[in-house]
Amino acid sequence: QVQLVESGGGLVQPGGSLRLSCAASGNILAITAMGWYRQAPGKQRELVAEINSGDYTNYADSVKGRFTISRDNAKNTVYLQMDSVKTEDTAVYYCYLGSFWSGHYDQYWGHGAQVTVSS
View (cartoon, rainbow, N blue to C red):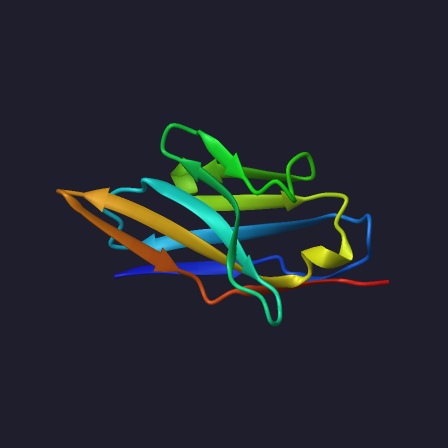
């Protein structure tokens, strides 16, 4: 089993910065990709950013130029640096890990970290 633990959420003012971390542990056979989704009240969960094993990154249009995803392979940890945050960034942020191994793909999720952008 694989466990993902998010940290770094909280309250931040518009225009401020916040950094989320997600540490993976357990029986990790391979990390194909890690990333972040978010879900705001009354809305569907949406992709925010992801990074694959080749360090290719993908961002939602709404966060391009403001958020940066990175990873520390030695620590099995992915980060989301959130700059110039907006009130519409308020959501629960979920970390995921995708693992493709021996012809089988599994996806694991964290429990979520609340990010609230408010003055």
